[in-house]
Image (cartoon, rainbow over all chains, first blue to last red; front, side):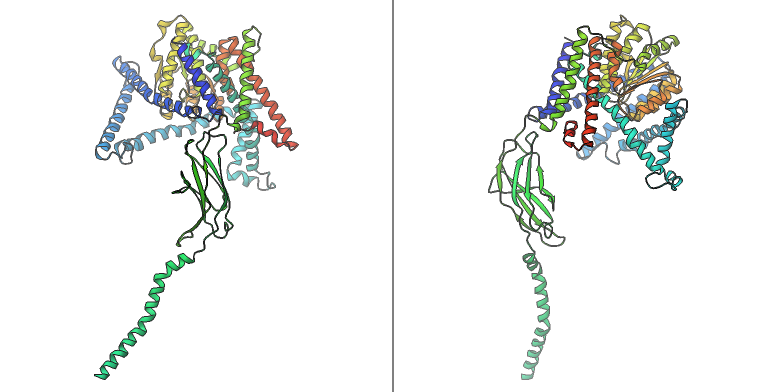
Length: 223
Length: 402
C-alpha cells in the first residue's frame, strides 16, 4: 500500500491536470487551481521540515564537535535572530495596527533584509562575473573546430553588442556591420539551436510525465 | 430739500448705472457652467450592441461588441460598458474602452445569471462637464461553459500522437523487441565517476536543482538520484545530497533509502545524507560552495532545474578538481555547464537518463516513442516551411498553441 497509494494519487491527479488543460467546464477548469493551491499549502507547511532538519544537523555538528562545527553556530544564530525579529515585528505590528506587516519598510526585519540579506545575495551574484571569465577562458580555447567556431561566434556577438563594433565596421554598407552580424548569429543559428533543445525538453517532459502518471517510472518512489 | 432729493436720485442713478454691468457680468459668470453644460455637444450613441458568450471558456465571461458611434472620431472620448441583472436597471459601469475600440470582454461572471448590457459613448474633455449617450439594452444573456477548448484541438491531437507512440513502443519493448538506444556519454560516465570517488575515498555530491517537486526536471533529477544512490550503496561510497526545498528533501530521502535497501545496504543509509540547506537561490549556492571547498568531493552531479547559480556551483566544483556531470532542461544554463563540467546531459538527455541507467525495456520503449514524436515534429516543421513558401498559411494552425 505504501507504493500503490502514491501511484494511484499520481495517476488521478495527473489525468485531471491533463483534462483540465482541454476542458474549461467545471469542475475541471477549477481543479487545476485547486490542486496548485493545495501544493502551495503543503509546501508551506513542509518549510518547517526543512528548517527543523537544518537546526537538527547544526546542533548535532556542534554537540559532536564535527569538522568546522563553529560554522554551525553561525547558521543557528542567524536563523534564530531572523525568526525572533520577524516574530517580534509581526507581534508589534499586530498589537499596534493589524494592517501592518513585519516586512513593511522601517521594521527591524526590513533592516536585516535590506542591509544584510540583500548585500550578501548581491555579493554571490556578483561573483558570477568572475566565474564567467574563468569558464569563458577555458571554453574559448581554440582546441578543435567546434571550440574555434564557438570562440568566433562569441567574439562576433560581443563585438556586435558594443558601440565599438559598429565604429570599427562603419566603412561597411548598412546591414553588414558588426551589430548586424551579432543579430544574425542570435536570430538564426542561436535561435534554431535553442528551439531544437526546447522541443527535445518538451518531449522529454511529456515522456517522463506519462511514465510517472502511468506508474511505469517508479524510481523516485523506490530507488 | 428738493436739491437734496435730486442729488440722491442722481447718486442712486449713478450707482445703478455703474453697478449694472458688474451685475450683468456676475450673472453671466454664474450661469456660464449651466449654459456650457447645455451647450456641450452630445455624441450619437453606439448602435447594434451584440453580446455573445466567450468561446472556449469556463462560462465566466461574455464578449460585448458594438458599432462605433458616428461621432467616434469627432466627439467620443471613450465608451463605457454598463451591466445590470435586470432590463430596467440599475446599470453599473463594468468597463471602459478607448474611442475607436468596439469590443470588450466582461469577466468574473456567474454561469447561472441573466445579464443585460448597454454601451455609452462618452464625451469628457478636460475641465468640461461630460456628456454621454447610451445604446438600447441588450439581453438577457447567460454565459455558458464549454466542454472542450477548441483552440487547443491540435495540441490534443499532438498529445494523442505522442502518448500513443510512447505507449506503443513500451508495449513493443515489453514483448521482447530489441530496441537500439544511442550511447549517451554523460550517462555512461556515471559509474566511472562514482568509482573514482570510491577509489579516492571522497564523497559524491548530488545537487537536484533549485526548484520544487512540481517541476518535472526536479522529478527527473530525483529519479536519477535513485540510480546514483544504488551505485554508491553498492560501492560503499559516501553520498551527500544538499537540497533547497523541503518537499524535495522528503522525496529524495525516500528515493535514497529505497535505493540503499535494494542494494542490500540499509545499514549504510542515514537520514542526514539528504539534508535541507535553504530555499534562497544564492544562499544555497553559497552553502554548497562552502561544502565543496571544505570537503573536496571527488564527484559532483547537477541534475535538475538551475538558474544563475549553475555557473557558481560548477566553477567551484571544477576548481575543487571534482569530476562533474550535469543535466538540465534550461537552455540558458547549458553553456555554463558545458564550459565547466566534464559531461553535460543536454535537454532531453536529462529525462532519458533514468531509463538509460535502468536498462528496463519498458522505460527504453518510452525513449523510442519520444524519438518517433521528434521525427513527427521535424516532418511537420519541414512541411510547414514548404507550406509557408507556397503561401498555404492555413497549415500553420496545426503548430499553433491556443
